[in-house]
Image (tube, rainbow, N blue to C red; front, side, top):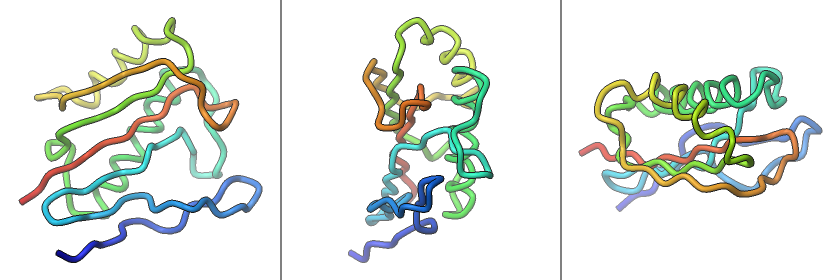
Length: 128
């Protein structure tokens, strides 16, 4: 089984390359690295949990498009929130993205590696 890297190298706003791949295809599965709310300028977007959730999901959609996949192919997501109080607002933004047959999901509260990041979303995609 061939393994295929999807996406370009990842850099932090200070120019440091991060040692990870955005996504990897292994057979019928595609595993996405956790997506933070990096905007087009390479910085975490402002605007709170709704704006950051939407940016994470936009980043996931861009990788899906690059891989020739759709959000209907997502079978599992894992979410990290830094504040449990953000869960209701996160859920509303998440629900708008997955308005049909949402994937299985885990959601936990945890610190994230970048202090300005308040949500991270990772997905697993299946496409035969």
